[in-house]
Image (tube, rainbow, N blue to C red; front, side, top):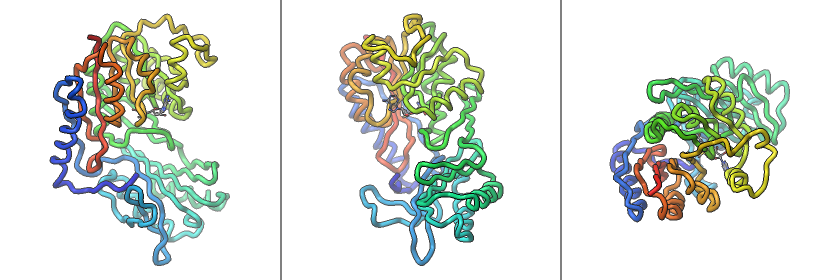
Length: 362
Ligand SMILES: C[S@@+](CC[C@H](N)C(=O)[O-])C[C@H]1O[C@@H](n2cnc3c(N)ncnc32)[C@H](O)[C@@H]1O
């Protein structure tokens, strides 16, 4: 992540500019005015990573501007990051300054925190980790009240848990989420909660089933599953799928079938291009799909997956890249129109934009 230009005085103008950009991008599709969901002005980012930079014989937290890997910006406090991260930063720095075992060849630090107050720190090293390191890291984890994951050359030592637990409220119900270290999680918890409530509202109470692609740790799956008879959810990342399975269980949600498949593979399966062992025992024809929910990575949906979504009455699409969102809508616009759209300010003080649309069959 490059460093956002934090300046709360510019927040409202920046958000208005993003809304105008979204209106312009969606104008060819006759979209309604976007609903705009703002972010807290500071302490909104629940995860962040820093490189460590040596200067004056000390290691410092550092970030870089986009495209410049040689000029570090040394950082002592980071007002966009959660209060918990800002509390932990000096405590961790003091610990590595006091211990050669903790600091030797430490090159990167990642913080993962939650609105509910949980925290995990990942320490990445250019050297193997040994028992001496583990004993010190255990002492540090206990002192800071966090889990610690030590990473070195593909190996991982976990002290405590390798996930944090978040709690998010959707339509008055509290959902509990395990968020694994190293896997995707929405960075802005307050805005994530707004997205979940929007998606819940927009989907509405349905009598037909839901297909979900790119489901991650089940972030949207849990609340959306309460709106439909059955869900088939898919995701490519093994750690996210495992977290999603645990999250379904922890929240007592039993109408979701989860399969580790890429969107491209699921498209092939539904198009009967080829069978998949991971779908053995799942009768795809038993679903009465009327709704599809997608939240793809920045590249958007590939053309075949996008074509697949055309079969559905309702396509609910959350996007972190308005350009690929617009390209996907352009492919679908002859059969679907935009009924609702929204801007979620996940990434204040950057040009990045998270948006959502509901497409319904014409
Ligand atoms: C933007 S994240 C959204 C995850 C989830 N909906 C959430 O809110 O946390 C995109 C997800 O797509 C997954 N992914 C990336 N490429 C994929 C593909 N080709 N097929 C299926 N999932 C993919 C990633 O692992 C990630 O979990």
